[in-house]
Length: 272
Length: 149
Ligand code: SF4
Ligand code: FES
Image (cartoon, rainbow over all chains, first blue to last red; front, top):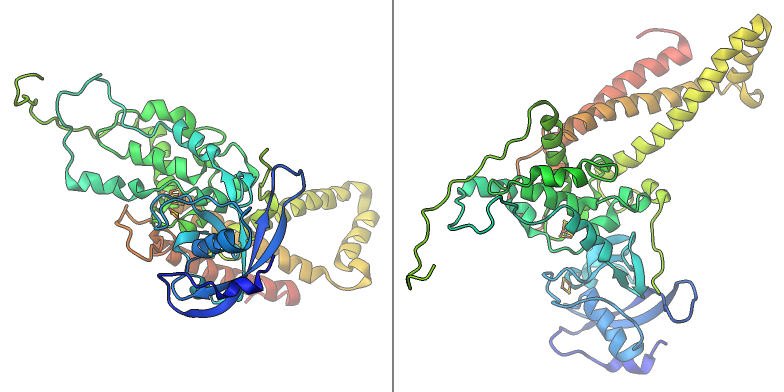
């Protein structure tokens, strides 16, 4: 399906057509039980086109059956992670011309099951994320006022809150490649993010998941997760810091720094 | 129906496209496996001393001249390189995997180069390289000439 007559189509909003680039895309159709195979498409690349734009071009003009996962087209939703020329990248954040290649190979993310073509089934990512209880755990049921936090205390975990759950770190991780149950860089980094938060009191509740056979000790610091993270979350750093907390915990029991409470709120209307 | 897409253990040895740390990880695994096999072979080899001096001497010569060629020193050198890398990188990993010498959490800035793989971690990598050069240099000269530099 190489629509040579289609190549006159010029998309609005992009620069002039620079050259034609071949996309070799791994296709898998769940309905006919064939193994995945590669198909090639020739796309006229205009200045400013990203890999996602090219995939959408293929979908619109060359092969409607191609499936990909995307939403925001601006690197925020974390849906469009795929393996582009051998490395995990957000398709919407990857300029085709910047890759500097005439052949671009696109694979779905690894270490997930594939639903169709470039669509991975990321439920594993979310399951692992849930396992580490990614929320602030407190004793009181209903706080009456804010928990105060100094800017310095916030800096201790602020960078790890940038995670957009794209799941590319799990795809790049060599441990996830061989250990299916491994929590993965994303979940472990989030585990640390909440443990490092002075408002949180859930250290012991998370310990079971983190300090387990498929938890934090499975990391071997290959740094691939940090290398591919599109938001600079540096999950590898979080995992090592988490390990430090867990190792120290053996000798000196971990104690949350704690937070001071703001004075109790009186609602303006008098109904609290 | 979804389909399995695991990269599998073979991916351990595919460090291309990622950074230095990923390379060192692949080498660490590889040398670990090589040394494990070597250790077993080594135990078997030395256990042959129980079979008397004749067998022992024959095995010593056989191992020094595999396939009739004097490969022995090269094999020993390779083991030395693997062992020194695995040991030194192991020390580096023990340090950084306990969160030591790593940066404090920072504010990521575009283009988002991870700082945990740089800075003092890089200094440690350099130290691994330097110590390896020294150890392997002295060792290999000794293996081939018997001289201690
Ligand atoms: S840590 Fe980075 S790579 Fe991993 S899911 Fe979050 S944003 Fe994606
Ligand atoms: S489409 Fe949202 S991150 Fe790429």
